[in-house]
Length: 121
Length: 109
Image 1 (cartoon, each protein chain N blue to C red):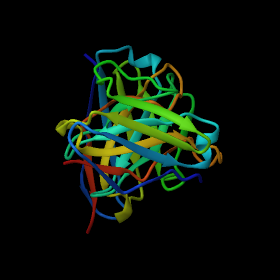
Image 2: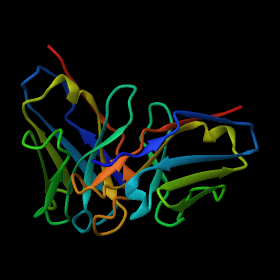
Image 3: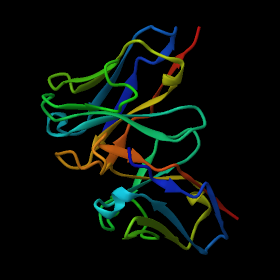
Image 4: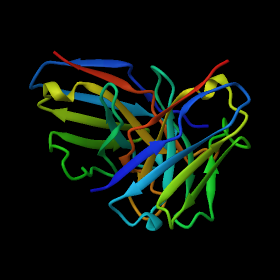
C-alpha cells in the first residue's frame, strides 16, 4: 500500500525556518517525481514545488522561489521541503504528492495527510 | 501565469447528473486532472488525462475537454460525492509547471 506521511509542521515566527519531511512507503520512491502542494485555511490548492526522481531537477512556484528548497533522500525514501524566510502568507497545510507516472505528468495520484504550518508572531 | 476558473458552487439532486467545468488557456494544450477533497481530508485524484479513472474511482465520474474548457461529470450523484472539486493542468504560460483551478463546492441535495 502506497503511503506518504508528512511531518515537521508547526508554529513559527515570521522570518523563521522550518523543514518538512514526507516519508514514503509501498512503492519504489526513487522512480517517481514528487511534489509539494499547499492549502491555506479555507482556500484552494496551490502547487509549490516538484523534484525529479534522482533529485537533479527542481521547480518552484514564484511565491516561494528563493526561499524554499525541495530535496529528497532516495536511500531514506524521504522527501523534504526546507522553508526559510517564512511569511504569514505561507500559513497552510502542506501536502506531499506523488506524480502518477515516472515523470512529471502533473497527475498527483497519492497524497499525504498534510502537515500544518502556521507563521505567526 | 495561467489561471483555471471554476464555478464556486453547484448543487445536484441525489441520483442526478452534474457537470463541473474548468476554463483556462492551458486547457487548449493540456488535459486536466480532477481532484475530490472532503473536509479535513487530502485530495483524491478522480480523473486524469483524456478520461482516465484511477483504480477504485467509481465509473459515475467521467472527464471531457473541448477548447479551453475541461469538464468533470458525475452521473448519478451520490451523497458521498459531496465535496470540493479542483481541476489541475500544466501551465502553458511557462511561469510555473502546474496550476490548480479555483475549486467547486458540490452539494448533493
